[in-house]
Image (cartoon, rainbow, N blue to C red; front, top):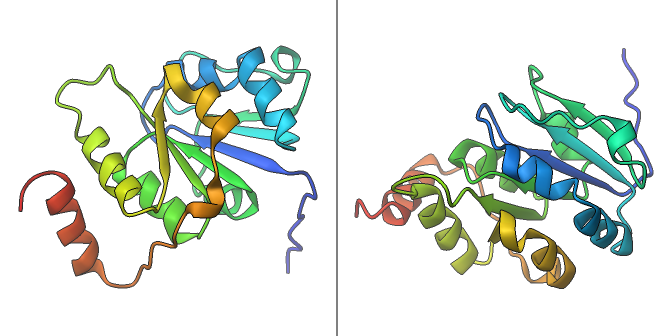
Length: 172
């Protein structure tokens, strides 16, 4: 039996899924954003950078404990141990974070054409399940966010999620 190690550090987990979203990784590790995270009591930053070319090392972010990786078989433990999840707006990443009952801040990649991610984020935001922003508004969103207003997203009814996605993407 393996004993799980639970860190007492207040942790932010950032995921870009299987994509490349270097702009988010650069924005979250900027000195201004790290300063805001520290002011909010966060002490550790865990980055899943996917296919990106930006791969921050602990030496590039000395103000917080930093872990960086590309992929793991499962990020469930990273999600479970996080106090805040910051994610790209992929449906799978959003669903996994919301299913774990964690506060979620979605960063929409506004450089994508025909951005269905924005539609998904807006719908989940309007239902009070998450907060969202873009890379250019990330620092200010973190500074002013109130995660206490977020409502749980209830899982276990796949048809409800399918209907939700259809509605969010304008298919219904």
